[in-house]
Length: 433
Image (cartoon, rainbow, N blue to C red):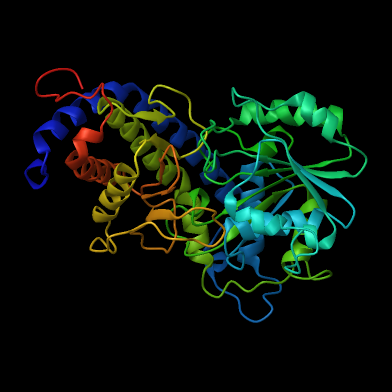
């Protein structure tokens, strides 16, 4: 493998050191995979899943035994009263929008206490009377409370902001395109407890994207009313071709279903059109695939640290999602990193990604995603906005081996710009990396 890399000698030394550092951490990931796999296997057995549940439905999709059974399994695994696990939900943003529109009414207020959410939600939130059908266009007020400098919730500001019109309080588990750390489920549980004291009438919503199966619990286990995410991320296990999920209290999931489908129909309709087998199998495989992605993130962190880059979380730190952030400080290095990941992809490896405008994003974004399913970030991908400090966000990986190869290829490209590396970088053939 190394003979195919321009800087193979250096990369081999870094790889060996990285694998040595993370060896004990890999075992902990495997133990958590075993824990979740047992839970899933038991849920499938208790539900009595058989071949009849894997059949597809058409038309209205009423009385779809497979869909109904799977959504009971998802609710059980996520510690929720009920769930939607549907191919008709086209993305995580779509699932989140259904939750927010389902819960909120004109004159009420949405407050995000973890800072501004993902860029793609800005257009869902919108501006007053913008004609887009956004939350603001429907007369729903919105505030985002910036985090403190240490990345924690500004509780005095939250206390001052909430009021009788505060209907929904949003928490984003993952960091998104920000430098703050992602929030653990324990931290989210503490937030929920404080929110209940401050604003007991509010519905607590958690954007759970990238976090499923990383920890032992999900936010619904610690009191969240609603969570949502994408099936081409963690819970689809790399097999699901499209879709999203919503889970939580029955009252609030029903309201989201009314927005997603129609009042009165709720979750009763929705044909599966042959996707059911992938949904069942993908969810069953999800703990294993998430484990592979986490191993890859650990390796990436250790490798990039050896090269002198700041990468978070660090390889020895706890994790709550599959995202690895790399601080590159230079647009050429960001572009080289993403182009290296693309070159190590099984699909479209010949494509050379370049920064370009993207719907829902304020800055040009470079995206590497040579995936079997378009946009599937449970498969190895990397992206980042072209703005200082030029942060790359890597996520996913169906196999640990693929992530390792992707990181080696990316660093091989970056070493062509070794004069832009941090000053603490030295040739590992001559000394410490």
